Length: 153
Image (tube, one colour):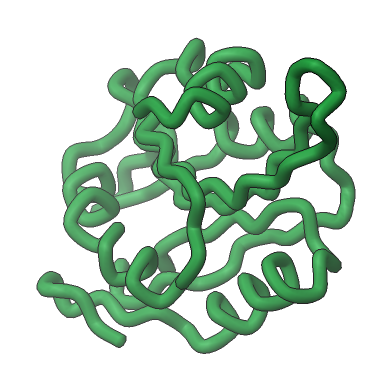
């Protein structure tokens, strides 16, 4: 599948998503654009749900363009599990996260990620929530949990 920008989605992106969604074999997937900005690929997957590790990987991502390097936008899917109030049981929400830092990101990578997001999302059926994060405080665990459990953002 290709976006309006000509960016395609690697088949592995869908395979890994199905492992997360159907097999519950993964806790999260981080996606990135290749260095030539032509294809969305899987950068990393993990069975470990440690939020701090996941958050750190997003915050420390890099992107280069024409010899310059800046902070790197990323897409991610995270399988959030949480307890309902009043002991009503556990719930799971597979959440799409679009991380594109406002500060320190080069313009071309930021714009290409923004315009290619739908190409990836359209290949991932069953996403329960979406988060657009541009500042560090927007990818804090408590902030996202508040949003996804109330259906905001």
